[in-house]
Length: 77
Image (cartoon, rainbow, N blue to C red; front, side):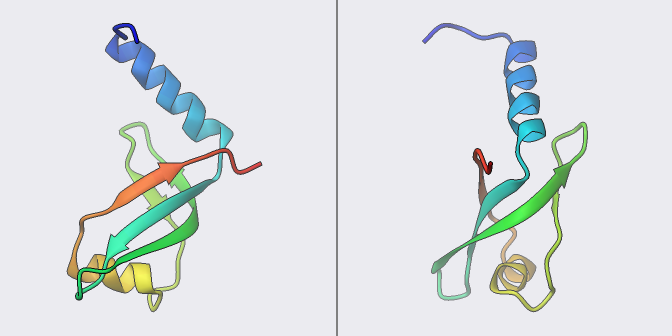
């Protein structure tokens, strides 16, 4: 692996985000169990991600109690 500039990394991330529409979101429950869900997303120029979800879903309830997450974006075509 070579060294990549910050601009190259940002361009690569933007391309991945632009080409896809689903992400995998992992949250943590009160009992420290991991819950993974797929969601449609949008993002802004600062890479703040937003998902549309019902407030009574497991991942939404988990986020209210613990803001730690992991997300993965993958080819959703």
